[in-house]
Each structure stands twice: as structure tokens, then as C-alpha cells.
Image (cartoon, rainbow, N blue to C red):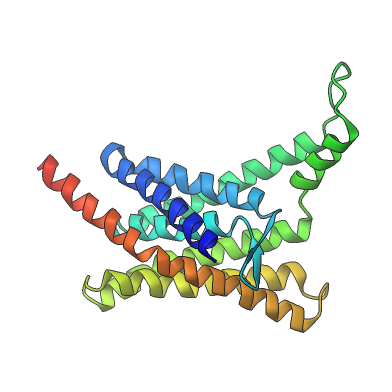
Length: 233
């Protein structure tokens, strides 16, 4: 459990740093980092990690941090920039998917013979089952879009107060949508209902823990923006 907390704080810290740099050098940097993280999350999902008795993909840390970025974008720059990040992430994943499929199916150069075990390892890591890809893309679009709109819904309801509330309320519900949609579409019929429910609960609990841990980083990003804005004035 300690390892999970340490790695989560490290990941969120690095992401927050990039957002702070974006506040100084341009919002496009944050949008680009968001798109990169969504691609990286799908690659890391091949490995499974254990958090206590719970199981989840290694990419859960990286993917969960993308919700922090859209919330920061929404808080500082407005809803439209959050939507742009979601669209950028979607097309970044399409580009990555097509490129990976080409690389996996392309014959190696004749003068370079990859050892069979490395060839198999490469294909195992980068070969995506069509059903998993569809599940990932559907869950991504719906949950991330919900996060952008939910964040601004709560911001309006609270008249701009209680940053912690809109950050957690939007992220936790969005993560639930993402988890239920992805696991249901990807594994329904392939595993028992009890196993399906266990996968959903396990991954969602991990994501909620990450969402709670990202709250201080949301405040750090918002506060740094105020400092940078005042220094430019």
C-alpha cells in the first residue's frame, strides 16, 4: 500500500509540474501532455499491479492523472480547453493504434533477425484485441467528456467556491463511468458476473484513492496559476 501511495504522489507531482509549466509557457503544453498520457496509459495497461488485495492495470496511475489535467484546464482556462484535450487524446490514441498495428504486422528487415522470444514479447505487449480497443475508446470518450461538463456544473452550482468538491465530484463519477463501461464492454460474457463485478469494484476503489490523493495537487496548480498571473500583471 505504501508503494502505491508513493508512486501515485510521484506521478501526480510530475503531472502537476507539467501543468504549472504550461501555465507559464502555454496551455498547448498541458493539452499535449494529456494526449501523451492517454496513449501511455493504454500501453502500460498490459501489466497488472496489486494494491493490497485489489488488482488493476499499471496504467491506472497515468490514466487517472488525466482527469486532474482536464480539471485544471477547466478551472483555469475554461470548459472549451478541457474539451480540446479530450479530442486531442482521442485522436492521439487512434494515431498510436494505427502505428502500432503497422509495426506489429510489418516484417522485420532481412538483415536484422529479432530473437524469437523478443519478437513474441513485442507482439504480446503491442497487440490489441479489437474488443479491448473498442471498450477503451468508448469508455474514454464518455467518461472524459462527462468529467469536463460535470466539473463546470459543480463550479456553477457552488459559485466558484469549494474547489475540492468539484474536483472530486466530477472525477469520482467520471471514473465510475469509465470503469463500468470499459470492463463491461471488454469482458462481459468472457468472465462470470461475479468476476466482472469484482473487477469493477477493485479498479474503481483504486481510482477513488488516486482521486482523493490528487486534491492537494489541484490546489497547488490553481495557486501557482494565481502567482504566475499576478507576476505578469
